Image (cartoon, rainbow, N blue to C red):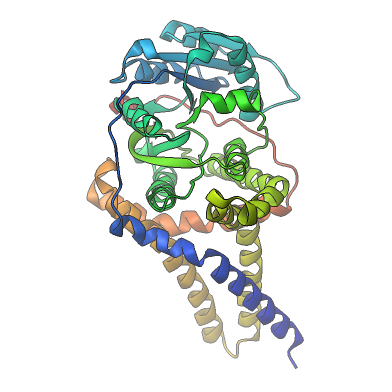
Length: 422
């Protein structure tokens, strides 16, 4: 009796069953935007907003972000810009002041490092500022971002319609910097069009991701500041608020641009931090989400959806990869011939390739006009996208089972394509 093969087969069956049961609903997210129509209402009033920007050594780009905020098709008297220059060793603070930020703060703390801690310090200053607290909502942005001229107006439409937490369409400002930047851009298109969009279409809550999102000022007052300091502070904020009854909506027409890493080492470090942070969020908040499934009447499905989605991002990806790779490798060893072993390996790789390709096909086709590349490049990067997604599997293993991951800033700089969005 082949005991090892039997055990691996049972484990693969269990993992496959869990994935099928827990994530079956997410298959519908791919087609929902093709069936349901987005409902948009034009705002009846212009609301007052503050832009919160945490920056570490971002003198090369922060001025561009502030310029794009000050160029919005929105009443400038209703916009305030607050910057936290976090552990900077360059002239980020001076550049932010020269660009026209309302107030710039500086923070130096080598023990509490990361965006969550910087936001905590910035929000502490905001709560003490009477003028800042006249804002009805606050946007969170990274220093390398740029805004479409109608971004604030479109987010105001959602806020005026009752949205208390909202996120926009995350495009990429350096699509043509190479495969990695384009692949990451495709990933966020998939995130926006498939995940954020579909959840909002069915009235559930989506997840705010890193940058380009808005929250109501009274949430800051209610929480008495910013209390989210895990590596994935965005996911932590979302999970905590959804478990308390809040909802986050998606605004497809509120477009902003984010600069993506274009080297593999940068990309690996960034995604490992994301997945490590996601694992932290699950370990800290699985109980509130589980309670929410049974007790939070308005957000039961949202709590379930976020719980399984976060688990899939890190833990289930790592476990599925380990079990799947072990089964494939063992089957190859037990194969009767070299050709049979190669067929087994090819089937494993081809299955992953098709699964990852299907994640991006519909979103990229639906949003292709927002991708500033030639058709041949769009197609080539789409066909290569599964290889980018495949690297998530060892990253997930490293994030879940590896050593402690620390927040590491991604260096941003000037690029020719970035100027196109200015």
